[in-house]
Image 1 (tube, rainbow, N blue to C red):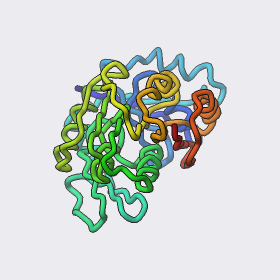
Image 2: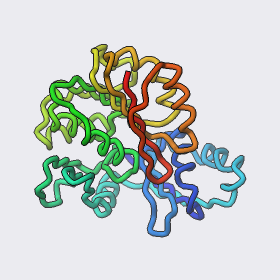
Image 3: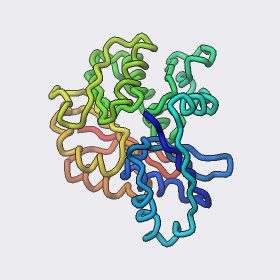
Length: 274
């Protein structure tokens, strides 16, 4: 699959807002340039210049944003991604690295093949989810990784003792990557399903992980909650700090108890208990 790379200049300080908006247009990976500008990636077949312009024009602070579009072959994409993939340390015991990085002494060694799926630990939302998980008990737990991306959260869940992990994603490339990463990490308890809420097995989960977007959380949380055991734990991220009230209000309506909160780079992560 060919990817288009959209480089949005003059966006310093605006990247969190742009990511949230571009996510709704089908952009699935993001990074910042050395100058702090946003670089967004989308399958070339899904790129629509008019949609991008229509998104930018109504926003007063973004009218002057310029963008450049390049098409990347898969080979070029992977080479570029690998060049920028650096190991990430989460807490004292967890490292996220690529297969070409040397193994360290961390207790949890997450090896991620850097391809097109979201979730390498570099983004604030994934980092916060991993950080939450490090402080939780997963022993013999049934876990749902809703919108799994690379499967990175599923990997840590299994390494921490989860007995059964169901993972799903609407993107075929993400599902393929998640399965590859499970194999790469010798994880055998992760089952990956392609699709949305309709493919999620109707188990009673001890823990649900949802590192997605605010809109997807709002749409799916009422359907996910019945699958969570009483006393079960729900971790959510992909929420911009200016969208926090929407999720907090929904969680209160659903009678969830707030356990934890994290904030990093304009993003938040929330820990609730049923």
